[in-house]
Image 1 (tube, rainbow, N blue to C red):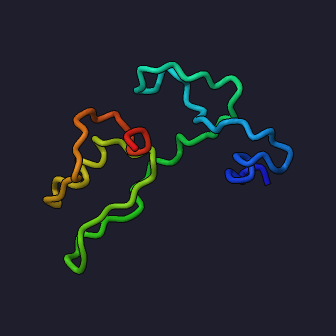
Image 2: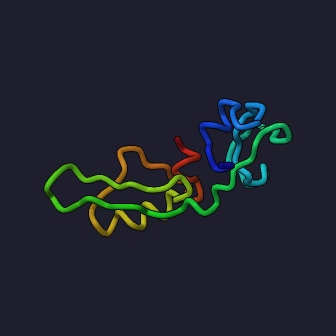
Length: 101
């Protein structure tokens, strides 16, 4: 089907193997580089902004699983009341986890 990211990346199923880029407008990015998206296959990712799980019950090392659209501000507001913090803290609240990766 058309949602097969691996198939699109490898060029199968009729795709030419073009680069994958987010469908987000370039002006919304945090990068100082201009990224041409004209020849890329654009993928909608704006809906991937959910916290999937937080493990802080004391049975193992605390962890959080989030989708790439969760912002550092969202994550900080979630973790601080639990007395948790990321190993690396990004002070720009609007940076997304996916963008910081």
